Length: 75
Image (cartoon, rainbow, N blue to C red; front, side, top):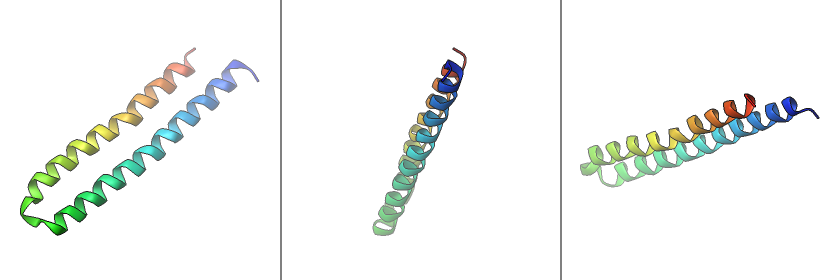
């Protein structure tokens, strides 16, 4: 295999793994937040704010992974 094929394969694997991990992380954070809101509706606003911060941090992972994939493709 040439270097370009290996780079393309590596970039595809990085992007797929990042997308899967992000989807799993977001679904877990959101489901636990909804569960907590159902149990304690009086702290709903605090939970929602914390959830958005957590989801934002989780979303940083695929952005970093895509940057790494693009760097891998440029070599």
